[in-house]
Amino acid sequence: MLTRRAAISLTLVASGFLAAAGGLPAAASSRSLTQPLGTASGTLASGSATSASAAPGLASGSARAASGSQAAAANLPAGGQVICDPSGETCYVLVETDPTPPPPDAASDTGTTRVCQNHEGAQVPCYDETFGWFNDQDRCYWRLLSPQPDGSNPIWEGNYPDGAIYSVTCGPFPAGSGGGWAWSPTPPPGFGDVGITPAQMAQRAVDSMRLTGPAIHLTITADDTGLVGMPVWLWTDVTPTTWGPNSATASVPGLSVTANARATQIAWDMGDGHTQVCAGPGTPYAPGAVESPTCDYVYERSSAGQPGDAYTVTATTTWQVDWAGGGASGSLTLTRTSTATVRIGELQVLVNG
Image (tube, helix red, strand yellow):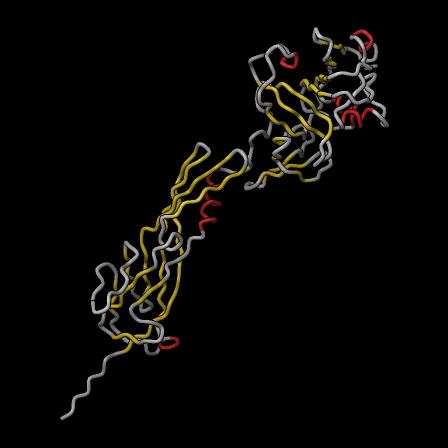
């Protein structure tokens, strides 16, 4: 039994033993876990723990250490061994177990958002700022240690500098319990997996811009009536949401995408069966001027007989969006529409004589 009170670490190869000690889910593959256990008391014997004291000891990161590897080894499971550093301040308990395959429904992907579930089937965050990334196989959180332990640390198992050391946290959340340090040759399953593609993140960035159709302006106000044969000026306010340029960034842990949007044209459906396409936002009306230098339209017949005796003007802006992030890039073409009404009459000339 471990009775030494010092800065102690337990190294568990494969968490099948960890499951026996703390009631935690078994890992999917053989690995070593080093659990710093502090100086508080707990018990660990014969590869299992008493329900009253050992599991709480693991959950709180505490254990009772023994004085010397021989005394500790007497209580280890078959094939286990104790490794202590030369100072005797830190010991590692090595226990070999067979890997246990993960449950078949360890995680699911909706295609837009990754869904992570713990061993009880409850949904948990796929990323936690404290614990790191959720591992879809062992259902523990893995966080890359920074800085990495010195290459002489036994947790490397002789593999330094290959692979990396991770802090592993298992058990109920948000409190977390069990786990320890683990060496892995590659990032574990789910590490850095945000469950969403750069293109989907680009769409989120575009949504945050709140792009709209044109802020329609005409030389004829809603209370006035224009004339057949007279140019009607067409323009929009130039703002980030009505014409651009506009830019936004959408981010989740591990992925950031920036999108840049600009309008390229406005198609003005004038309500009489004709459409005027203008490459720019138009020019605000200048009192006294007749024709717009950039965008106008001439009605050939009255709006009498139309609903409300007015034409419905539908203006559709085409937006070009370029995005980049997450090692990918692309473009989107979007349209946004606004409507207004305009009354057009005919000039009546009376001739007397």
